Length: 450
Ligand SMILES: C[S@@+](CC[C@H](N)C(=O)[O-])C[C@H]1O[C@@H](n2cnc3c(N)ncnc32)[C@H](O)[C@@H]1O
Ligand code: SF4
Image (cartoon, rainbow, N blue to C red):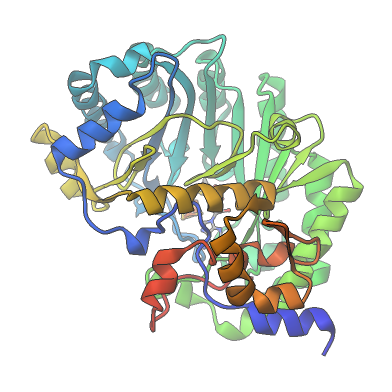
């Protein structure tokens, strides 16, 4: 076995993606209304505080069999209008209870899903015009971004978004190969992705992102090299290169393809390395552990200037004091609390209709949680952090194997991931995850690290 295969064998264990800390399975209890309001107020009490807004649109016309997102599959587009009304109502609940919010600077608005372009151009306008105006959208400084499914996006929708001054689009691509696409129930001819990419550019979007996934069924090095070539031809400004996260105990549709079709850990890592070297050779820089951006792109600049941040949406250049999530299943975060909305559409609707926060679950962070969250954030975004004397002693013990394998360096209170260790960044973060270490889970709750 080659040394990398041995490492993969040793370290390909279930670990969180650390888009939050504590990770969702270790959230203790939902904040009640007062606790949630206090956490929100506290997060934006300073006059120069900033916030960002996430809007979740859950609908998709068809289910991609790998999908781990919170979706509602329907071809019935009449569901869009009532959903928009409820989103606007949820926004009014927050505005009434937290009037100070609209006096703070709105830094970033992101529409995610599901598929935000399930909504027609008119519907997007009827949602975003009143909402953005009352939220303090500033065309000069607020950034607007949206996840779009090229198969379900029209020029008219893109025009509406540009008129509202959205600057960034993120296209779900995953893989260009027709056979892989068949197995994941996502037929998306290259022509479609090309058309939407070109239209986005013509309309003046300043940044186009592609989401790709490695580790999909039947993906081989040859097949993936064609996907990489197609990607490079279209030259998106950013690329998110996600490892297929398999969580079939949560998402039963992931069982629709056979395990035999899936690349093993070695093959999977080889797919990442293939893409990584092609992107690096073609003017991209690697951001954190699974993103790439052209050198002059804001995400690359943020990394260079040490401003990279990571939240539920992955790597971002915006760190705001509050991330407010609206819509079914949306997650909000403040420095002291996490909050997730009801994940089932009728339950979310009911709470909004009752004029309540649609709380499903959440977590109030202890002092220890807050410290560990900062450590994890630093490590995930900078690849290094400083340890206290006691942490250093503990780390030598807990991470001894990784240090011995030259994946990590630990010297004079500084812990740093090595180039060789990059694939195992999440494994090293587990050191700071006191809750995981205390719980020692016996059942699988996270996807594999590779
Ligand atoms: C909400 S979707 C993007 C917008 C739109 N629904 C689409 O698919 O085009 C978010 C992204 O999450 C990624 N994703 C979904 N399920 C995943 C999984 N199980 N493992 C890794 N990435 C996944 C895909 O790359 C997908 O593009
Ligand atoms: S990947 Fe996108 S389009 Fe496919 S089911 Fe998931 S959210 Fe919907």
